[in-house]
Image (cartoon, rainbow, N blue to C red; front, top):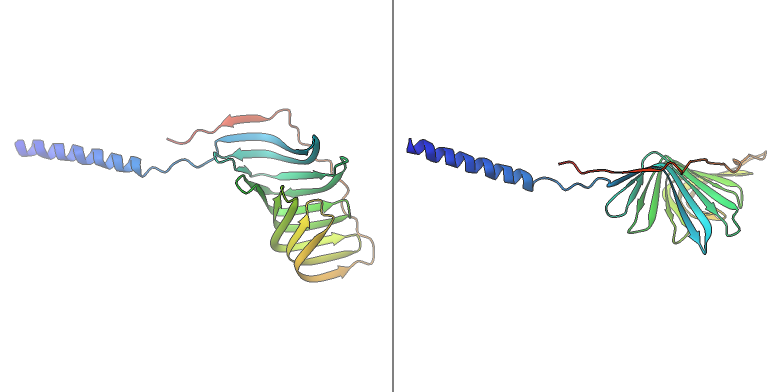
Length: 200
């Protein structure tokens, strides 16, 4: 009887230890802490709007990073208020520490200073440097030619660019039309935010 009692105590201690190990092995929640629908982020300089970032959904993380899982649409403006270029992609991620946007999936940039369109699968945008760049394949179409290559560095208004490794240029016999300025409408007066609680 005494032996049975000691065995029972041992089993209880073992069960408690196992429970503590499970708690110690529990991973800390690293998911988003905030979710927002229909967002608009405005960058301004001396009270003049220079960039507008629009997305149908945004996740915000504890470290300040932001994720745009469904889409992203960015409008770049000149100091006089005219739109100089746009950037559109299937998704994007913003890293606060580096102040860097990474756009992915069917990325398209349209420039209006010198009409041209660029397509790629991935593109980075640095707001501080006002630059866009990629190391992926790019296709650039202007009114009279199509250029392709790998890697690109350009101004965010797409007024000038450099393909790092050009692969070819096709000259067009007839003028090709670069898309007219889009009028991307995303309502912002119904923005909803909600906290995302970590799983227990």
